[in-house]
Image (cartoon, rainbow over all chains, first blue to last red; front, side, top):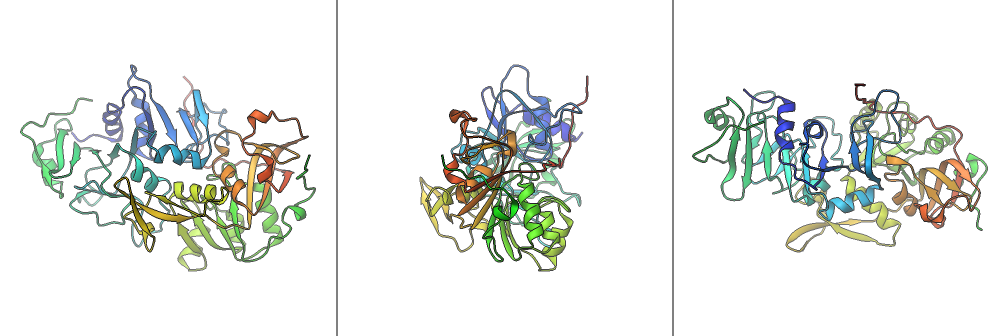
Length: 219
Length: 233
């Protein structure tokens, strides 16, 4: 069965390693924070200026001066720090943040990502996404495998305006875990429980390499 | 001691004219200079080019200047939550330049640091890079971006003293420090305005040298855009 949003987040949480600083984008990526394994310590960065972001506050304890980049009220954990926007992107550009997780509208088999603009629709802006994808060494995309029309979001070439080139390393969708390889394109590493390799192949337009053994993901 | 204290909003906006480029601190509605925005609305200054990460919401923040048709152009990274903004943008009344958030911050920081331009990887290969010089450093392409040039910067801090030293609170810091450094004239509004010597020098985020005018804001509404809470156990 295809994963739901929490399933995708849960699978991505298994990628986190002890000691990592992690930036989570808006949407499914935000849910990853709920599934961090007990035996590791990570700190979440939000690009509006906090490291050590905690869960949402209890009702009545919201602080207008403490939000994340999605403008949601949050809390800070022991050991957290605040800083200004230029320092926030300084740590992003200088690769002090080990992992970026973000959503996408399209990803190409070369690791290009499009996630900020749909021609003909109101453009809201790229926020920090272009800075993050241009500098992060480890980018995981969290998204549905197909769009609402059922078309593949894993393409040979992005059709929507690009956010960044050759940057995505791994993609976790409702159907599969795929890595991006410079020659092989998408490499199918895992499939969602009960999802067949054939279904994934049929819903992937970009170049796809299928190894002999594609295990079901354990979540 | 050099005093930066001003005593009324007319003094705060002295020299602000139509067609100027103006910076506003804040991220969403967090840490925005509410009192200065209200005063600019009252003054009615027109055709402003506004540099601000976001554009406020309907009826609050920069939304107040938008609905009064005082903004000619917005330079922002994200402008999502504003119907009047969308209407003016689609009708062509409002010019919009969208730039990556880190580049926006660095163009402010550069302006306040005497750095005219810099190379960044953000936006390479995208429409942001159009007509910009590209150079390869360490095997990776970067694009040339320039420091902003703003006549005024309006910022908001938590505490300030008479000499203009500022301390920010939580994530209300965001763009305020780098914009405070960047303004030809920087106007800081603070929640608490204290005598010189009241703030611990080690704790100052922005030294008063960058601040030209400081005043205690009369009202800080501090609206929350996305109120999200955890359940009590």
